[in-house]
Image (cartoon, rainbow over all chains, first blue to last red; front, side):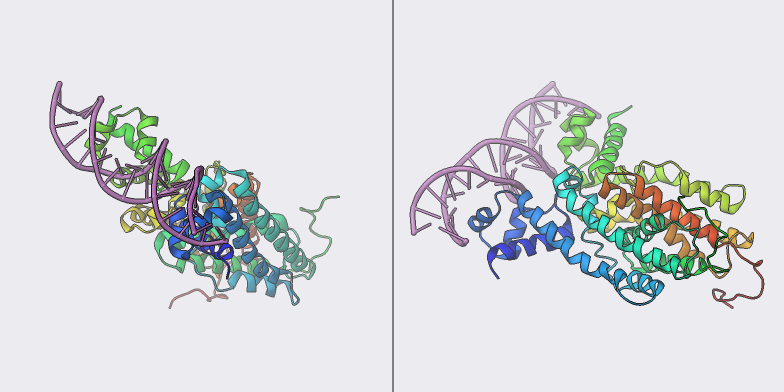
Length: 200
Length: 200
DNA sequence: GTCTATAACCAGATAGAC
DNA sequence: GTCTATCTGGTTATAGAC
C-alpha cells in the first residue's frame, strides 16, 4: 500500500477511535510509520487529511445501508439492518464526528457526514414505504419521521452503551423499537379508513 | 459569585459547547476572567475542574427527568417529557461526554454520566410500567427495552440534527416514536392473553 | 516522494511573592 | 486567594537537502 492510502486509512481509524480534534499529525505518523516529509507532501494540513479520511469512513458505511434496498419482504430487511451486528462500544464512525467540536464548526468537514446520513435516510424511507404498501405497517405512520426515529435509535444507542460501558442499552434500544414496529402492524388491512398522513 | 463557582459554571458551559479534550485551562480563564493563580488554587488539575463541572451539568439534567415521575396519566407524562422543548443543535450536555475521547477513557469522568443515565432510565421504566398498568400501552412490551429506546431517540436525534445543522431530524425522530407508542395502545384490554414479558 | 532540522505557538502545569 | 513568572513538552506546521 502506498503511503498516501496508508495515511488516509490510519487517520480514518484514529478519527473513529478518538475523533478529529484530539488526533494529532504525530499520532498518525506513529501509527502509520509514514514520515513527516511524506505526510505533508500528500496532505498540506491536518484538515486535508481528515477530509480524505472522512470520505473514506463514510464510504465504508453506505454499502451496509443498501441492505435496506435489497430484495425480500420490507419488514424483514428493516429488521435485518436494525439487528445487524455492531460494536456498540466503538460507536458509529460517521455519527461520532457530529460531537467533535472542530468538525461541528467546520462546514466542509461536516458535509460528508450530512450527505451520508441523508442518503441512509432515503433508504430507510423507501423500505418503510414498501412495508406500508405491503401491509406490514400501519399506513397512518409517517415514513420520513419513522426513518429518523430508527436512525436515532442506533445513534443514541451507541451513546447509552458507551456511557454504561455495556452493549446492553444499545441492544435494548433496538429490541424496543423493533417490538414497537411489530405492534404497529395493521390490525385491519390498510384501506381507505385512515388518511392522517396523506397529502391530497 | 465566588471564583470557584464561576470556574465550575464556565467549565460546564465550555464542556457542553466543545467537550473536555478540546477545552483548555486558558479557555476557561479567558471566559471566566479568573486568573491563573486562583484557578490552580481551587483545582489542581484540569481534570479536577472537569469533574466538578460534570457533576454540575448532570445535576442540571435530573430535575427535568423527574417530570416523568410526576402526577397525571402516564402516557401524558411520557409525551410531555419526550416533547419538552430542547435545543437540538446544542445537543445533550451529558450525552456529549460519551463522545469525548478523554472522558470515554477515564472511568472517573465517565461515572457521573453513567449514573445520570441510569437514573433517567429508572424514571422512564417506572412511567412505562404505569402506562401499561393503566392500559395505555400493550403489556407485551418490555419497559426496560422501551426506556432505552426512548432515551436513544433523544440522544440520537441530537446527532442527526447536528449532522444536518437542522432541528428537523430531531423533531421527526421524536414524532415518529410517539406515533409508534400510540399505535401500540392495546387493541383489546390488557388481560391474561399475553405473557411474553412476564417473569413467573 | 521522503528525510531531518527548525520554529512559533499552545497546553498544562509549578513556584514563589503578595 | 490571587498574581506574575517560568518551564516542559506537544501541536502543527515550514525549509531545504537527498
